[in-house]
Length: 79
Image (tube, rainbow, N blue to C red; front, side, top):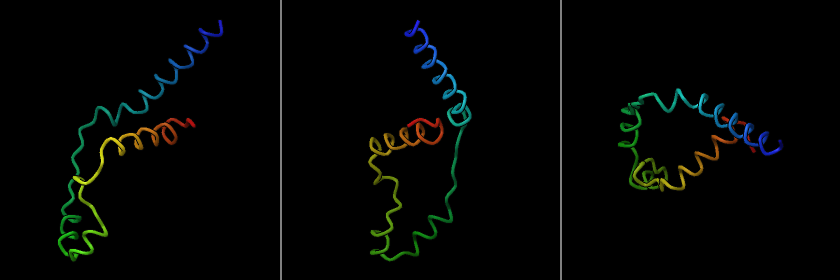
């Protein structure tokens, strides 16, 4: 009985999470950042180092782990 309730609770949480994220997961996203690229061109080399906006410098495994944690906390209201 208790195990069944736990499984149902987990299933419901998963279903709720899936429905909440459906819009973002199924959407096609293209971000245009011409203004940002223009701004970066105006920065001195020192400023470009201080304000690193190059996505190639992102450590993606850590970024995705932090992203998933944020989703759990803020989008799914889980601690």
